[in-house]
Length: 392
Image (cartoon, rainbow, N blue to C red; front, side, top):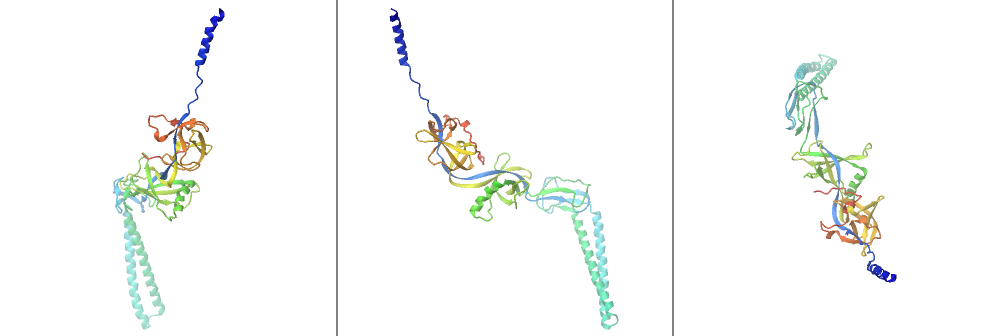
């Protein structure tokens, strides 16, 4: 009787055990892949630069005196030769009058001694006077001529100083604030009166490290050009691209021993006077031209202990890690110099979830829609950064 009770229970256990399914195998990780692409592009680098006037002059007086007038509007455009300041010229006028008088006296002395010379010439020919007396008169003529020349030199100097009391602009440009007021005493060649700078063009000074310098000159050496004019661009502090293209117009003689940098300057046209001295910007320079080079997205690169790797998926879906040698970067792409074939499927997103040897499901980046999940792109951050931000 007891055996009959356990038979249905045993039957139920056997039935339930037969219904239990074996555990399912894990699904392969889904990753996004892309084959390397060939592009021809310029690789650019940005360098921080400070703007300065191509020509700039500090206006100082060449004479001592008090400021009589300020004859310009502060911050305005001025013309070459336009009067800017006038200095008290009373003492200069007295010096000029004295010089004029000295010239007049020297001319009168010379006239008298020339008359004596003419008379002595006749007398010495007749034998009335000695040859020594005649030679003394000749010497006096030479001395009188020298005195006249000295007096005229002093007169010219006085005239120049008189003209310098009216201070004019050295060239066309924009003038800043007046540093002196009417009535102030100025010292010759010392007191700063104002500053004038040209506006038609602007110079942007920037510095290169020794490595940057070598990177820039290598294309020049390879091109064989002697003095190439290298065009450059300028990005302003608000991120906008300045519409005028500039040229590198200056490169220093040597690398500075103090800073270890190489001074360079680029000149840009400034027709609307948008650029002002003291502003900052980024000079964008083409450092390399890559013709039909192999590129990958920078986010596909994995950097480990200063070595660069990519994860590749073969035809069977198996992941392999390969070491690659990289070149320059531009616009979110990095050049692959060696270590990778053109037709290989490189994991762009999701490589952190696909270890070497693992089986994955590869989806081409070209087939991924904006709303379709394609691996954790947020975690796929490249360890190499593009040297040139992509313009928007």
